[in-house]
Image (tube, rainbow, N blue to C red; front, side):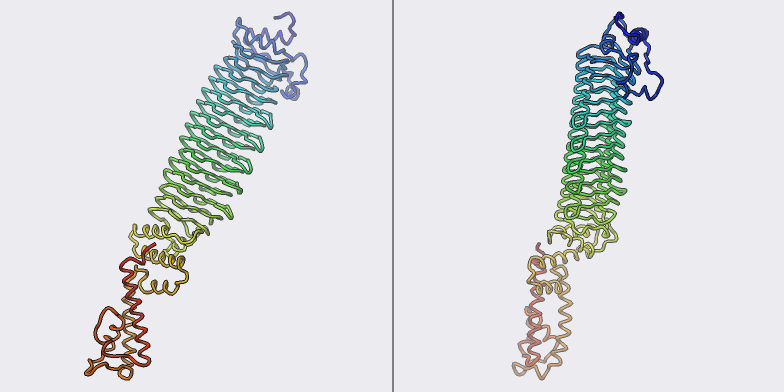
Amino acid sequence: MLDDLTAAEQRVVHATARGQTVDLRVGDVAVDEPRRGASWSQERTIRAGLVARLLTDTEVRSPVRLTGARIAGLLGLEGATLVRWLVLADCWLDEPVVLSHATAPLIRMTGCHLPSLDAENLCVHADLALDHGFTAHGEVKLARARVGGVLSLAGARLDNLGATALDAGRLSVDHHVHLDAGFTALGEVRLTGAHISGDFVLTDAQLINPGNRALTVGQLRVAQSVTADGLRAEGGIHLAGAQIGGSLTLTGASLTRAHDWALSASGLQVAQETQLSHGFTARGGIDLRGAHLGTLTLDGAELYNPDGSALEGGWLTVDRQISGRQGLTVRGEFSLYGAHIGTRVDLRDAILTNPGSIALDFERLTTPALYLLPRRSPDGLVDLSHAKVGTLHDDSATWPAQIDLRGLTYAVLINEHASVRQRLKWLERQPAGYSPQPYDQLATGYRQVGQEDAARLVAIHKQRRRRRTLNPAGKLLNWLLYLTVGYGYRTWLAALWLLALLALGAAIFDHAYPSHMTAMSKPAPDFHAVIYTFDVLVPIIDLGQQKAWVATGSALYWSWLFSGAGWVLTTAVAAGLSGVLKRN
């Protein structure tokens, strides 16, 4: 092995035998920069074949440690069994590195520059470190690789824009995976079906693949947490079907994929918290359809997708709460259609904007508490149809101009400042027009807290709105039913009308007697103006006065008027008592 070796290569052989590191740097920071490795002199060049020979030599088992070396030629170790650690630092490799189907105890290539890395089905018993300045100008393949320790690409840069920068599909790692500390990928990063027994860390990473997916981790399995605080992604993040045993944190992250899903996470499962908060921004939709989360925090986030759903959470399940407080801003549709939230949905101080379309789609939402308390009125339709809410917190000052309440059920309304008449105006904001159920639900809500008068007023307004909507031509009849018996909910009004008409009639007919009152028989009974008026007003009772005395002149017309009023009152009372007026 020693016959044709250069002086630098002889240093490597002898140092490796003693377990020492060979440092070929010249001491000039500018010259020693690894990205300048193509210009390094022959004194710093080590042939790739020698490195491969040393790694597979079974006679000596000390690590191969090189710093600042230029490795010339193809480092081809496909299917090989490496008996020594490979520890390269700040090295330049002229050609790709091939480690597919190889087995190694430990590999570190910190700060190294190389064209590409093929490590499919690689098995590393301890750590695999491609970090802190590691740079690949082509694809890094780790598909189906197995790492017994930590996989680190912290601070690495992978450059394969428009294609795959990192392919780690079905990767298996026994500890943590680090794509953080300034990790940058130009091109797609794939970990589809990967299994990580520790944490998956993407803090402060940059994933750039505009117009396509920047990160694809569908069906990922992470036993602990995924942390991506400060992540910047230009391209979509695909998390569909992933399972995370701890938390998912994207605090302060920025995701951009206009006109498409910035975060696609349908079927995602997160056992603990999901944090999309405190500076989190998404330019594009967030898809959480069918996901199952412990909690979802959107505090202070900004979601922007005016062409569609800013957040699509159809049939989402959250064990505890969704929090969208502290200035959550949504420009686009915010949908929780059919979602089931364990404790509450809190939208206090949120800003919701989607002009001309749906701002909030909470149709068929189920939750014990809904805090619908945005900073200002939502600009767009709020759909609460068929939702089931235990306690509904709202504020009349921030009610939307349009709100769909059909089928909404709630146990308690928490808003001490909203009067019954304000609530009635709340019901009139439905874009579909009159619907009986929202009135019935509001009346039930008042009745459950003992406010019978308020419940009755709602029921009366319901009937008035019903008749005004279904029979707009019958305005006069509608007013008569409202004024006389309150559509059957205030039949006592008929008694007041009867007393008022009785007093008026008594005065009129007393004045008309005897000049305009003619006796029908002689001797005639004495004339009593009050009894005569009552006889005229109440057609179902005969007191003899109307038969004995006939009005003439102007009194005749008054008698017809009182008789007609009596029939109206009698009919209205009968209809009210029988419940005919209370139909939907």
